[in-house]
Length: 198
Image (tube, rainbow, N blue to C red; front, side, top):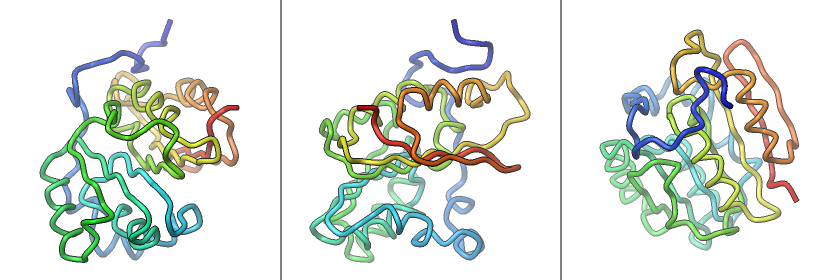
């Protein structure tokens, strides 16, 4: 049985998920502190199929699209339709609309992405903003290629009663479903680079 505060159920699409304003997710200060191309560049190559779960208005999606090029594909997923509309407009403005496929839906409901078709999944801050953690993790396992990798990062929480929180125990259980390639933690949160368990 899941501990209190752990969200392993299957709630309605997006119900209870946290919306973060677009200007906080994509702005010049954030780009200076954490350059998106540098952050994901080592995981993404030309021709790759990548997924940005919790994409917001495209902070990471657009640099990944530039990296994968016309022979690649970026699926950008966010339950906030306003962020997805902003991402679509930016993609078109940069000539990346043929590479970026943006969807307004839950990360736990990405059935449009084929099984074992993805080289890299980015879920940076996703799990701690949504309720259906298990649904999102199951989808990542389903869509990753056997050689694919996923990067998860979660923020530390002060409110363990929040169903979006990822407790230390839940983080441990979540990673048990993958092969952990690298991991770390700091004052702000925990991160892990994983692959599907063979």
